[in-house]
Length: 487
Image (cartoon, rainbow, N blue to C red; front, side, top):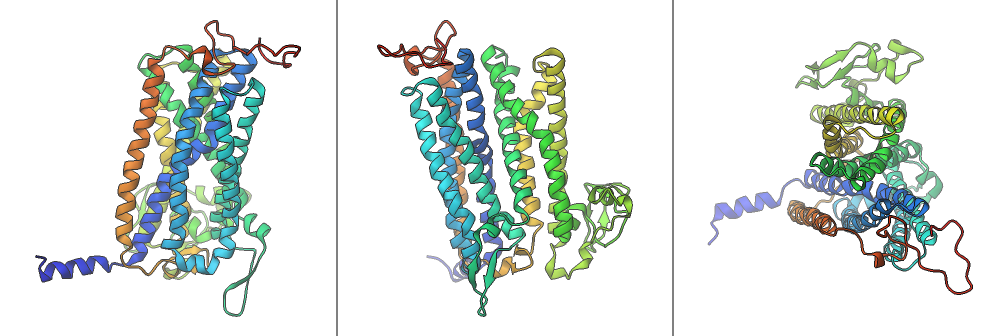
C-alpha cells in the first residue's frame, strides 16, 4: 500500500513548473536531431562527388564509396525523419500558447520544409534503388535533387527559427491575433540570410568532419589502402572548404546580432555594463553580483570586432541597458558565453586543420598522413558536433527570456500541463534506444562491408569490376553508346 506521505510526494512531483521541463525536452530532442542534420544535408553531396569520379574516371573505389555512403545516408535519413516528426508534434504539445498566437506566421516556413522533405525522400529512394536499375549518368543526376532539397529543407527550418529572432510579416487585429500574413516577409526575415548561411555551411563542415573522422580512425588502425584514403580525402576536402567560409559567415552573423540583438550580444561577450573599449574575455563568468570574474581579457577586442571602423571606441550595449526581466539571467549569460567560447575555439581548430590539409595538398598533391594529423581529424567529428550544439545554445539561450524576440516571453508560450516532466522522461528513454540502435546498425553495416572482399559485378549495372573499370551494360541492338559513358 502507498502511504499518505508517498502520495503527497508523488502529487508534488506531478505538479512541477512545466516551463523548465518543456524547455528541457525541446532542447534535448533538438540537440539529438541536429546531429543528423549535417549528414542529411552534406552526405548526399559527398556521395555524388564519389559517384561522379567513379563514372567519369572508371574509379572502382569511388563507386564503392558512393554506393556504401548512399546506404548509410538512407539509415540516417530515416532516423532523422523520425526525430524531426517528434519535434513537429512538440511545438503543439509543449508550446500550445505560442502556436495559438503565432502559428499562422511560424508555420509558413515549415510548410515549405514539408514539401522539400517529401521531395528529398522520393529522390533518396530513386537514387538507392537506381544503383541496379538506371544507366550511369541518369542515375547520377537523380542524386542532385537530394542535395538541393536537403539544403532548401534546412533553410526552411532555419527561416522559422530566424523569424523568432526577427519577427515580421504579420498584421495583428484588435484582439491581438494575427489577421494577415506575408509569407515572403516571414520566410525572408532580417535574420534569415545570415542564420541560413551559417547553418548550411555548418552542415557541410560538420558532415565532412564526421565522415572524415571515421576514415581517419581507420587509417590510424592501419587501413591505409586507396579506398580509405579516398573516403577521407573527399570528406575532409568538403570540410576544409567549408571551414574558412564558416568563419566569414559567423563573423557576419555576430555583427548582425550586435546591431539587432544587443542584449544577446552582451551575453555572448560577457558585457554587464554599456561601455566602449570592451575586452574580448576568453572563458570567465558573471558572479552573483553580475560582475565579470576570471577569464583572460583581450583589451578592446570586443569593441574592435563589433565595428572595425570605430575600433576600440565602439560602444557595446551592456546587460544593464534593459530591465532584469527582459534579459538572460546571470546563469544563462554564463552558459551563452561558455558556448560561444567553445564554438569559436573549436571552429578555429578546424580552420587550422583545414589550412594544414590545404597546404600539404598544394605542396605534395596528397593529404597529410602523419599520426598527429590523423588523430586530430579522428577527433574532429565529435568536436564539430560539439561546436554546432554550442552554436544552437548561443542562439536559443541568448534570446531568453523571449521565445519571439521582444514580442512573447517563454513563460507565456509554454504548456500549462504540470505533468510534462513525464513526457520528457519517456522521450529521453526512447531517444536513447533510438541512438544506440542507429549506431549499432551503422556499425553492423560497416562490418558487413569490410567482410565483403569487394562488390559483386552484378550489384549495379555499371558497378565496380575486377579490372578497376566501371562496368556498363552492353548497348541494346542498333543503339549507340551514351556519350561520355565509360566503356
